Each structure stands twice: as structure tokens, then as C-alpha cells.
Image (cartoon, rainbow, N blue to C red; front, side):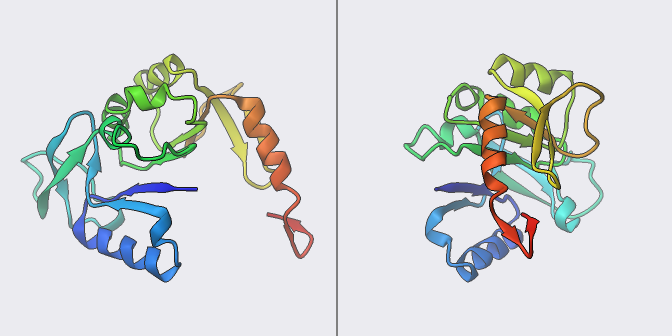
Length: 181
């Protein structure tokens, strides 16, 4: 498997690279010091909020820096292997990332997208690309279709819920001290 990891803040990017090397997986991850967005260019980020750094405006009172932005459609147009699973953790910038991934989201190799945020525009983008909202219970490893209110934290979108459910069922065979992991 191959992964692509984007980290826009240079100090955090260096930590990412160090962790990849320490875990011996640097050759499996295409790590880039950039942000994902709707169009290529530059964007202003806070750089004084640690794990909560995010896109900010000119009026942000703290420390900032301009970082490169690359649409995911550009990244994956260069022959980079398309990941089956995406985790988009962008502190409220999800719509911009999804806008820059229109073509990629239509690719059937993308099976699951995990997003932090949700709103009607995000739901429309995901549904228009063939994804369905699902709920995942990590303790039972069960996946079910959304039938009630939205989850409070992460939002899981699957292209083929039956395939995702089957993969979760197969993963139950792994146990540590008799507890499924």
C-alpha cells in the first residue's frame, strides 16, 4: 500500500518525516509540505496553535505563514497511486479540499473518506460522487448506514457499504489477549 500525507506547517512536516523514518515506512509514504485546497497557490496558516493550526485571514492576531496549496486532483494526476482510504483533517477547510478533489472523488478506487466536518454542501459533494454516509463502531467493528442524527466527531463516507462491512468483519479475526482489535 502507498500513502500520501500532506502537512503544511514546516515544523510539523519535519516531525512527520522523522516519524516515518523511525517507523521504517518512509518509502511507503509520499510526504509533502503543502496544504490541500481547491486551487494551486498560497494560503495563510496560523503557526502558533500546535495541532490546531489552520487557514486564517489577514486579521489573525497570532503568528502566521504562507504555505503552498495543491489540489488533490493535481497530486493524483501525476501518476501517484490513488489511496483507497482518505482521512481529511483540515480544521474546517473540508469544502475547499473536496472542491480540489472532484475528479479523484469520482475514481472508484477511492473506497472510504473520513472527514471531520459535515454540512449540506459536503454531503452533496460526497453523495454526487457516489458515497454514502456510514457509522463505524470501533469497538464492535460494525458499519451501518446512517439512520439517525449525524455523528459528533468524524464523518465516514463509503462508496460501497457492503464492501466496507465485509472488510470490517474479516478484520475481527485479529485478537490480542482474546480481545478483537
